[in-house]
Image (cartoon, rainbow, N blue to C red; front, side):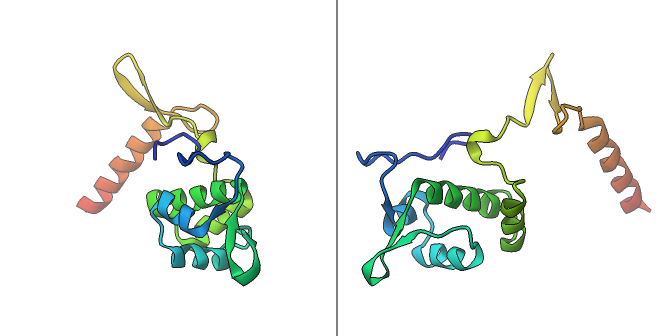
Amino acid sequence: MPEGRQFSFDDGKDPDALRTIGEISDAFDIRQHVLRYWELQFPMLRPLKRSGGRRYYRPEDVALVETIDRLINREGYTLKGARQAIERGTAQTSSARAEPVEARNGTSTISGRAGVDVLPQLRAIRQRLATALAA
C-alpha cells in the first residue's frame, strides 16, 4: 500500500460499502484473530455485528484499521502507545501525513511541526550520544 494515500479496495464495491473481516484481513494482510484482538485493545474500533456475530467494517473502521496497522507494524508503536496516540489525536491518518523529508539545493532537511529545520538538532544529539558512548 503506498504511503500517504488512503487505502482503496479494487473489488468493484462502492467505496462506502461495508466490508467483512475477511476482506479487511486480505486487504491489509492482517490475520482475522489479530483484528478481533485489536477490537478489544482499541475501544474506538467497533465494526457492526450482525446475527451470528458476523463483523462488518464501515469506511471509518477501515481507516482506523489502516492507522492502527501503520502505527504498530510500520512505525513501531506498542498497542498501548498506538491507542494513546489515537485517543489524543496525535496519530495522523496516512492521507493527512506530510512528506517528512524534502530536498533543497541537493541537501536533505527534516522539518518539524512548526516548519523548523530539526536536522541540526538531530546531529547535535547524535554527536552527544557518540561522545557518551566513547567515554
